Image (cartoon, rainbow, N blue to C red; front, side, top):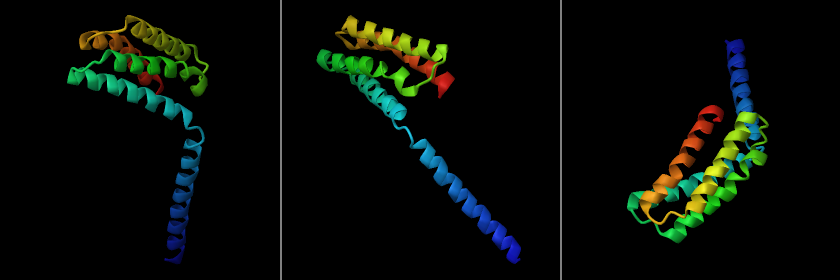
Length: 129
């Protein structure tokens, strides 16, 4: 009975130790998560504006510009040198640049401008998330 108790205690300590090590490794570089959170915020604000049918041109341009700026950080922050990843990141930057240049004036135009951006995000997330 004593041996079983010691084995169980060892397993519990091992699980707790493993969880602590995994948390420490995950917290090592917060930048990739921060970049994605920032982009998610701006995309969310654009989607909320479309749903509310309140697409103020200045606010839309602000969010699109922030998305374009943040997208330029994806490749260096993630540090993935695969051609497919860098191609997706470049395509995202190009599509965001096109959306900023289009300067959508109404909600329909905003939705049309961010649709290709969303498709690029989705394709990359399916592959690398």
